[in-house]
Image (cartoon, rainbow, N blue to C red):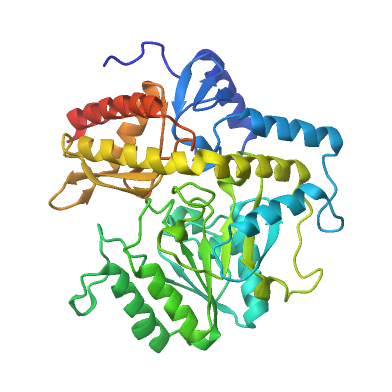
Amino acid sequence: MAAPTRVLPGPHAQALIERDSVVISPSYTRGYPFVMARGEGSFVWDVDGNRYLDFTTGIAVTSTGHSHPNVVRAIQEQAEKFIHMSGTDFYYLPQIELAERLCSVAPFDDEAMVFFGNSGAEAIEAAAKLARYYTERGRFIAFLHGFHGRTMGALSFTASKVVQREDFFPLLPGITHVPYPDSYHPILNADGCKDQGQAVLNYIEQEIFRTIVPPKEVAGILVETIQGEGGYVVPPDGFLQGLRDICDRYGILMIMDEVQSGMGRTGKWWGVDHWNIKPDIICTAKGIASGMPLGGIIARREIMQTWAPGAHASTFGGNPISCAAGIATFDLLKNGLIDNCARMGDYTMAKLREMQSRHPSIGDVRGKGLMIGIEFVHSRETRERAADIRNAVVDHAYEERLLILGCGVNTIRLVPSLNVTEELIDEALLIFEHAIARAEEDLL
């Protein structure tokens, strides 16, 4: 398969990148010089007219594809009525209707309530505040390699990359990080325990709770159902249930970060649904409104109804246009896209595992639904992480008009839109495999 001949980035993209460098914060991370002009479904076009297959979906955000007509129509219709009337002080139908829909799929046995913000980081902030308010406790447990956002409170829970925390000390006190169970790269080997999930559970109770953190002071345990930025790590079966049991024993709230894994991304409404876990609070954002800024928490009514008016609010949270987009997104997910995600996820995983047999650099293929991680190694025997191969694959794929992103140290994530087809998956994987072959030829 020959790579396209047109040089990237093109002249219009180069000019815009130069303008960007003058006025945009350098704290943003740009993996490659793609400058978007428009998108439709699973395709995007850059400002020089090059067409790409997008298997990033804005980091798992445009869940219904780019500019789905139902979502666009909902945005237009709401914008013609009114654009803003802060939900912190007034009432409006789109916010109520979206909250009703989210409550209807909340993974609780109890009734649920919703708080809206604008992003995943804001959802984490709200969950932490609510947990402290409800429990009257001040400490939290979080996980190494977890990513929860970059606002000061959310950053205190994040333990993904040192560059994200460097020079921002001191952060929010009282947060203790423990290993996340990664069976492919086990950290703990306590008492010869081969189950990394159980080893982490033992570590929390037998080490953390006995030495530095009194469990009666812990308000919540914040955990990603599937680690996102940390490498798309799927926890071993039994781990989340064991965490639920610990929370129950000590009166701790179980807070699930479903910002990346929720809203149908794993082939079910929530990642926890794969293990039938009943958390206390769920944090959501990203795919909730097909690209409009929206996030929030869904909590058991008993918890949410305790805090007083004014205890927490957001001027722009639950913006009516974002909520209208969220309603359209929800209905599309409910009426077929989640089922399609489950089918296409199985199809993609099978294709990738077949591809793995042909490429020694692919160490592990893992995921749920269309939240799929492919980890690259220099040796399957040693499992030595191959960040150089991963980075080369991302770059080669871009050159061949496929947009993908890395995560963790050496993993590539595939997160296409939930309405992707087998035909488009086949097209993307053909490019992906060619990119791997090029990277292996140079670096393996």
